[in-house]
Length: 265
Ligand code: KIV
Ligand code: NA
Image 1 (spheres, rainbow, N blue to C red):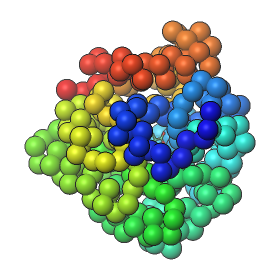
Image 2: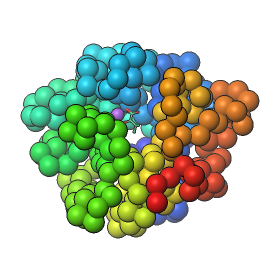
Image 3: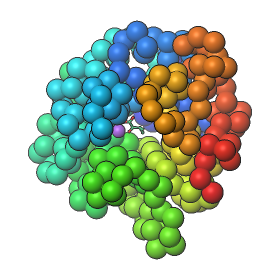
Image 4: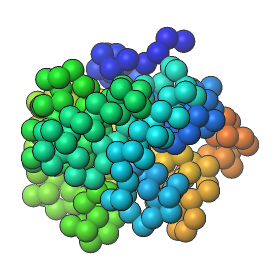
């Protein structure tokens, strides 16, 4: 099958094709993700938690991201490779460009992901004008953990929901070609998805998004501690790593994941 490209993302949405994304941090798992059929691989800064063992993602460096991204890129060719921009790399245009160039040139990422809107819109525009495709990330943005006081559902009150709708329009207008929505009520994520031309990828955002993303360690049931509500252990049903990936991709495609039990009303 031919590689998944950035320009194909809007077409896939227009055709109503569901997009499956999983996180990945090394070449061996990347090969399983590819044979399991995911369209998108995210080298997430969640690696600070699931690989490095920290309580949040704030300490992950550009070097860390480049290292893992390059490793993942050697293991898979077809899925579109998206890499997270570390904490505060969008604080200035120059920092954003430096980090994004390294993720593309050394890490082989096709697209970089930035959390938030506000001043981040300026960084999105700056990168997109320089032909670096951007994935936006709104809702529960884990790099804002200290502002939020923990990892919790966003966009609950009417005013917060309206603010999120505005941010979603703004990141699309700034040139983002993909939007991750994390931990927002399902009806809100569905409204935003209907309003935008670019695909939305949900995590804890209900079945109304154009695609889904989960952390690989959650899908395989190896993350220690309490399992978040929106996570399903696909290793149980899939029987092997590749089987788990296949089961996830199939469940996203046929709309059986996420169901109400794995979403927030
Ligand atoms: O770092 C990550 O894994 C992410 C996803 C949870 C969206 O940003
Ligand atoms: Na992330």
